[in-house]
Amino acid sequence: MGISYLSGENILWKEGWEGIFEEPEFKDIDLVSKFTRLVNSLEEGIDELFSDDFLETRVFIGSENPFAKADEFSLITSRLNFPKFQKEGIVAIIGPKRMNYRKNVSLVNLFNELLG
Image 1 (cartoon, helix red, strand yellow):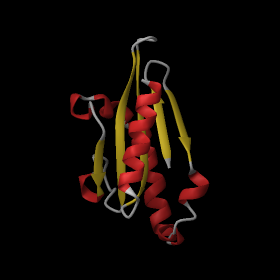
Image 2 (cartoon, one colour):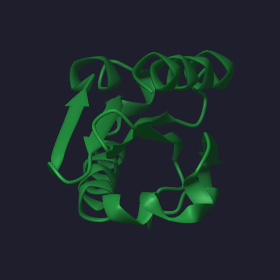
Image 3 (cartoon, one colour):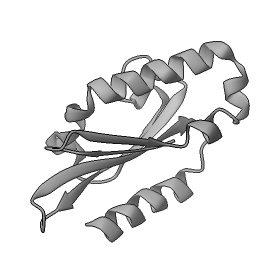
Image 4 (cartoon, helix red, strand yellow):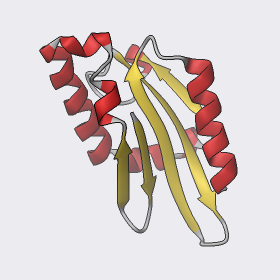
């Protein structure tokens, strides 16, 4: 699932709900519940991702995830800088720990490069 956020405008965009729930892990209703709680935590704590620790693309696997109770999931995140508009944002991919990290890190970096 992809998430992007534009600070100042407080615009949070989420895409990929349909695809994420087609993954085999999400046949478990308990895992679906944990995932939706994680997305809500991410929404509520999105400003935490603007700390200096998150200046470049970061990968958090399972318990490394900065959000509570996210041991079953991974998060790839990067800050975006739009100097022309004097805005900052975030792009992230969140999904199961078995995700294709190389592909998803490349997607986050490409997105960052194209927009920044």
